[in-house]
Figure: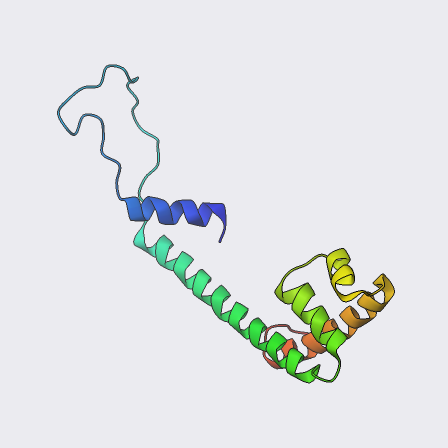
Length: 131
């Protein structure tokens, strides 16, 4: 979600802002401002944001399934499985993954290349990527 989308949802949920004169009292400590300002977004714009978020959530779930399948395929190779877990699930940096697994960077990059190639094949199969 972008900051603009978040602001739109907040504006929609909070409703219209009452004007200082709506209570009948005049606040002389504030300057008199006319026009401009934030307005309540339309229902259509909010529905479009929710639609985008639902699509992103579905794609994220499908990517999670891709990595679950990769982990199952890597049961016989614990290092490849750990590269997936640490590097893609826990979002650790390459240095942290190498330290956690006691691997050199070359070995890490070899495993990473294998994992990414397999992930790309599964993602194309599931319609998450196109070639």
